[in-house]
Image 1 (cartoon, one colour):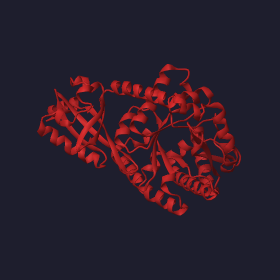
Image 2 (tube, one colour):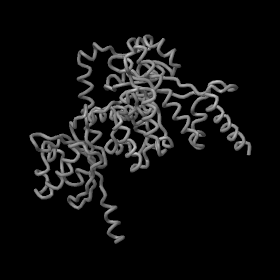
Image 3 (tube, rainbow, N blue to C red):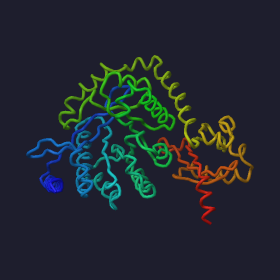
Image 4 (tube, rainbow, N blue to C red):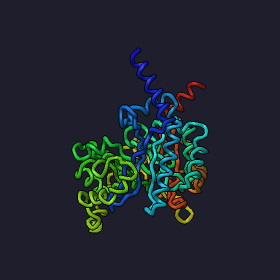
Amino acid sequence: MEFASEKFQLETELRNAIERKEFRLYYQPKLDLITGKLKGVEALIRWEHPAKGLVSPADFIPLAEETGLIIPIGEWVLHTACLQNKVWQEAGLSPFMMSVNISARQLYQSNFVDCLRHILIETNLSPEYLELEITESVVLDTSYSLQIIRELKRMGVQITLDDFGTGYNSLHYLTEYPIDSIKIDRSFTFNCTMDSNDAMVVKMIISLAHKLQIEVIAEGIETKDQLIFLQQHFCHQGQGYLFSKPLPPEILIQQLAQIEQIFNREGIGTEVFKQGLIGEASETARQELAETVKQHHGIIFRFKEVNGKFIHTVCDGGLLYRMQITPEQVIGKELRGLFPNPIAEEKEKYYRKAWEGKENVMYEGEFNGINYLVSLRPIQKRGQVIGVVGSVFDITIQKQRQKKGD
């Protein structure tokens, strides 16, 4: 009874906070881990409670989600963050990315895309400077969330998959969704210099991002050792208390030069990278990516068009060997070298669709007694498809169940 009363009181105070405009946005910088320059900021909400002082979002966001108050609060956050970024641009700062966390409740509201479009128009912020951070819980309803995210991408907004590595379907979302960047969960960053398993996870995530040509960001950087570890493995961006805690906008700008100096003092300098560290890290990344793909239960492959033919450039995974095929039989080959001509021609139609930019191309097949599902996703750079990534999943059991049902 007491808990219910406290919950009701907090909900009432939350409603009042919206009306009284008691919320504030703090901003945590993201730095380029090669140059040390500011790449963007993450907008983080705080509640300036008249009696309790500054309230952490962990203490009120869950209730806001439950009650639906996250909708007006989330809209305020988006509007305030976009406006602040435009203010900074007009003040003469070099344009950078503004990141905003989006919950499932927000994304699934019927007018979310229209609402965001209106905010961008109203604040006059170009969509290329807005990044929406989503977690796996946001995209559990694949059919609906995929449609929304594609609309956001068409607007020009960037999409980041947050807390990467903590869910069961992280790799699946990379092949299904048009993701621009992934964010390594802080739990892995925290232990990457102390725990060999977490170190391996971090290295594999970075390797995977490099191969898929998407940005990788590490959050929760708190020590010099963590920073150097991430630099040595060529993580693109980082944020954390080593550089700065979340700050009010005016203080962030005042301290920006100091924040970049912290990077220069604690991290590996740009000149060291020029002397060969990047090459060494890239080679390590390639080796570890190969091992990551090999351990994948399905198959991960990639192809590109060469002289009118689709040539496989990457292929590995546990399912490949169960099909009694080796990577050497696939890499460097086209479909006609793997399947009889009629089957190869049919599969090429799907390859062509993905190469022409169509998202979420899927088809089924059977090989050596294994039924499989293939999902294709084009990789684009500056609006041009430069490759296609495919994932293959074993659906033999599902097919057998369907036959029994028939």
